[in-house]
Image 1 (cartoon, rainbow, N blue to C red):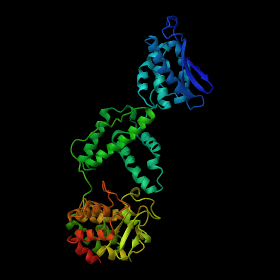
Image 2 (tube, rainbow, N blue to C red; image 1 turned 120 degrees about the horizontal axis):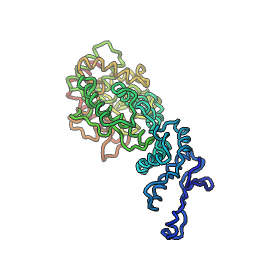
Image 3 (cartoon, one colour; image 1 turned 180 degrees about the vertical axis):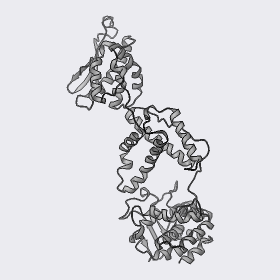
Image 4 (cartoon, one colour; image 1 turned 90 degrees about the vertical axis):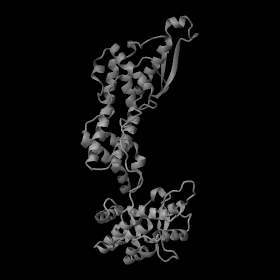
Length: 450
């Protein structure tokens, strides 16, 4: 397509514009008869003509201002040629007004878009065509935005060899979009969402929270996932630097902090119910061991024979990468050794090679679901993870120092150099655990379990 003011030198497009005669004759710009500069676009670049069109419009605005022109000249634009190109580029996705416009009307349609175009740092080819040609932004549903977000975030969702772990990261985004589609419909154009739409959705979430479908914290997360999706896709593909969910807020205070731990009495009652019930020995052992080590479902389920050290002076389990898992919480502070003693040790002796029933990638979900079904009958609202938080509370209550506590639990310690949980020897950890658990009511149950 031919474009005025554009010439090709070698393999690069250049912009060239003549100085108006009256300015040339008055030597306003010295003896210069024209201005020429590279557009930075190669003839081999993908969608090169769309990029050139956008840059030409910006340069025309720049030089028209220099030359004292108020508006670009209509004769500089070939509407028929551009709309034909736009039709092939965006599949005909341009406004009816642009398609039917005269050359002068076309210039007027374009003029109000140039200023917006200048604010985009790195416009995509679509944005170049949209802004320079008066084309309509392609519609974008929330489901389409979700899939595009996944493409743009491949390092987050596509590089993890643990497919189950990748799915768990991806699932909240899918659920957030499903919730949106259910409440608002599947055909909303994300590029045209207004405050009335996003705040209206928030009100629907408030109704669901009031109906106890989920809590306030979960409602806020659903908005957060949608904000992340739309912010990235709109910025990368549409040059829009804000998300329509940026201003959406919930009034009131969500429950903050960690998931609730058991009280000592609840822990005793839960272990009593589990041990006296018909559950498998694997499940009984894992519940007792978690209560006395603070290890999570997944950490325990993926233990192998090489991670279980029963014949050492101080028996312990190692939480670290092995043949079943590539990482442990990004291979940070969660890599650690934890002493086992008392009832936990007696149960572990029954499974020196690990827990075959749950030793698979979804084993932790199976263990959690089976345990939580029993736990909820005794301590409503608590879960398997409550063992971990109860132990952290017990350690803190026994005056255990934060750095030692964090070394046992696998938490980071600010300002303290940790090396995969090995800073403190097993002797220190065992002493801290025995002191923290010495006075707790569940010890009676644990002794019975042994």
